[in-house]
Image (cartoon, rainbow, N blue to C red):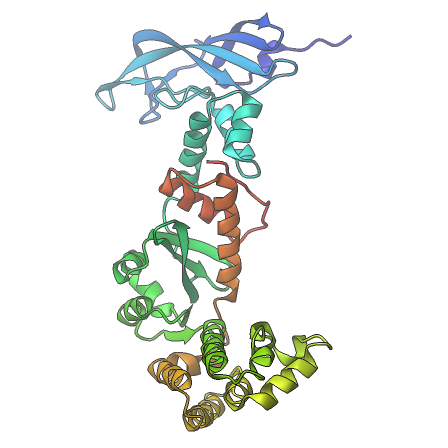
Length: 406
């Protein structure tokens, strides 16, 4: 019958296991100390030293083993006098980082692994640790992996904002459009917020940015023009269509107010019939649409003008957009006139879609993932931790469906 080697269960380098014992049915205690067969190594400079300054001990939590959900390791460690640093430091150890959280290094790795797919509270309950300890350990690991902005390989960007709390608190999100990687987040949605991202970008990377997709937020456009004047700003057609839908809604409300008594039932309750694309209407909705357009001339005008400009040649798109604006002005509706002026202010960014057929659609999908993280966390007390989790969850790699509690 084979036997289990206790030291092998605690395979720490340069360490010997003195003893292990069961403290109760689910708790074990282990005592370890430095193996004196090995030379002393300074934990700061990783160089060999000769003199021991002082002996100390510390109790930390280790990973569960078998029936023992709680395993405590009593570490005997040494302070060494390093002649290279000319200071007193802790001896290098494979067990734990003295001064860090009271867990072993392998316990910290287990916590970080579990936090990729479970909430902080779930991990804390599973390992019987305080949730703050779990969060701090996970956060420390995320800082190592995602703390610095990685600007490599950037060619096309997508920029958007997302509300992370009530009272108009926003995060600016910058994504590598080609990989789907969220590389940077910043608090706020002002020009200075985005400027911080470009300030850290190497000059050669700036020169390589070809296009940036965004909505029609002037603060973002201003910063992109300053930082990457050669880059084409591409306004998201989805946002343009959404703004045109508001025009339809405004005209519909105006027409309801002006409608004769016999026409009001036809116009009332027609919002979604007007906003839907004709191909998406149910068979029962088509007669209602035809009746509505026959009854009201102004609604017919704005509905007929409901188009999306998608061309792969800039000249064709410019001509189509010019013709559309002419017809919209001829309709003589204030809401349409305001929309035409909006188009004229963002003319170049709309035409750039012909050369760079990109949109914020991918980033909008990423924003939905961020909302899921926020909702499952019931809000965040630590904004920095939230930003790090966004980078981890939206790293452009195979997603695991990470969740977060706090």
